[in-house]
Amino acid sequence: MSHQAQGSVPAVPPLTRAQVRAVDARAVAEFGIPSLVLMENAGRGAAEWLADQLEPASRVLLLCGPGNNGGDGGVVARHLDLRGVPTRVVWFGTPAHFSADARTQFQILSRAGFEPVVEPGPVSVDRLTAWLHEADWVVDALLGTGLSRAVEGPIRLVIEAMNSSGKPILALDLPSGLDADLGLPLGIAVRATATVTFVAPKIGFAAPGAADYTGPVHVAHIGVPRSVLAGPEPQV
Image 1 (cartoon, rainbow, N blue to C red):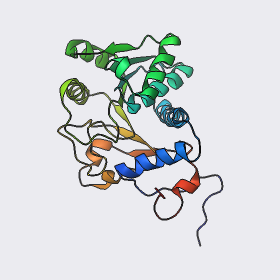
Image 2 (tube, rainbow, N blue to C red):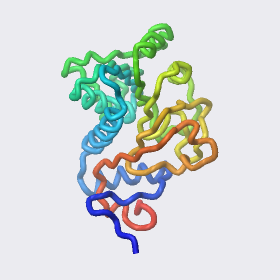
Image 3 (cartoon, rainbow, N blue to C red):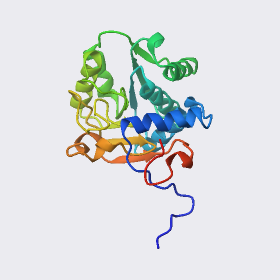
Image 4 (tube, one colour):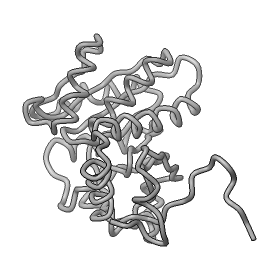
């Protein structure tokens, strides 16, 4: 009989989009874990993975959307900064329309002297191309698991620029534009070098061709109680 190594975290089966939402909701509502704590754990886990990949003096460009995936990116930025990694954070959207937790992360960065760049409207492709050229790694924090329709507008342009940049890309939770359940691009998706996903792999990652977008997938645990995830399937 095999035994789980002491101190290790049991693997969690892949989750659907609905299960991901339910896990987060239970952690907040039933266990009283603030959503910002879950976000902090997620971003810190991703930052730790990326820091291990960086060469000395590497520069990181974080591209953040207005939702909680962008908030995860804000956390990554802070933890890379703690390690002395030069970072540039670009946020797409208007802060007034960010999700509550993403807006909190944006405000923390602003008060910490990061001066994150805000692109509220049409994307300057020339400026974005220059930022990508200067970066050694790019963090995709644009869109999360909740996406279920085709990517359009400025974010599509950002994804196109990322994919054509030739730079290594770390996707947070899943590549932006990839359907979490089907593993198919919703019109377009980031082609990541690697993905740090939170809590568990998403069920779509096993779909044929999905690995072309995710790259190797690494799971970061965010402090969700084991009782939420116990059993052959998450109890959501």
